[in-house]
Image 1 (cartoon, rainbow, N blue to C red):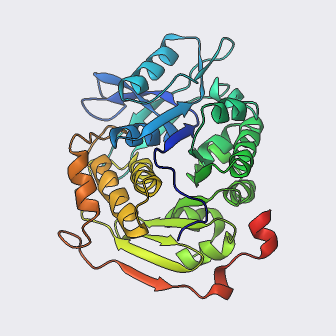
Image 2: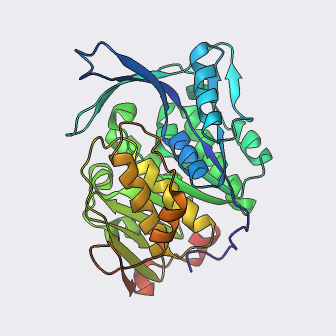
Length: 343
């Protein structure tokens, strides 16, 4: 079992964090393109859109400016089936915007988000989130990086959700340019992660952030969460519990653009887990949804065949390149102490 608390029959997932207007060139690189499209992007709203596409009751809570870009962001997410009724409007701060410079080798992004409405969120927003009656709350390290008040929001929300019996996920989403100082980021992100039921992290970002080498090192660094999900790019994803570990290899994908794949994986994993699926199925659905993001320039991949994806995720054979592996973890190596379990 991944945790002691029961899974809700009708999960309602609330994702909390900044979304921005995203300007994407349509005919080349950012420096030479003449045609652009305005889209919506943000780690947590990407997850909300993915969950909605997979048929879950998904809500997004944030703050936007009282401006056309804010209206556009909210309308775009609502059109994707995300509940935006709890989004706050700040009359004194703008909606953030960023420009994407896409490339198969890895897109670069240029942010104009300093002083944005979302960066002014604080711990009081936790009241708004919990008033939405979630069964699951999702946040990420991007929000923690925006401002000290946002950092307080993330910590307060994770603590209050836990005390209310609401399940939580924290995606590390380490963004060095937002944090600046790595050591401060490493400490702050570890503190937030320790408050969550599940932590999602890429092995490469964990190596950069905490100077660890393996998924087992991450589990040792973060003994408190019930579950750690580590993604190793195109190789595999592994779920490390306190009693066992499940590893599922990734599927081969001809990458068009990698941004948004981590959020898509999170949506797949949460959707399956919130509906009571086992770890292997959840990891497979994460891979499948992430694969759709890798094949698109859009941060919100189309999932018009979601029923087929759900069926495929339950099949451990088929096109999967290798068998799923499940093996026990020594209890003394990873089990939290009684103090950690109640902290």
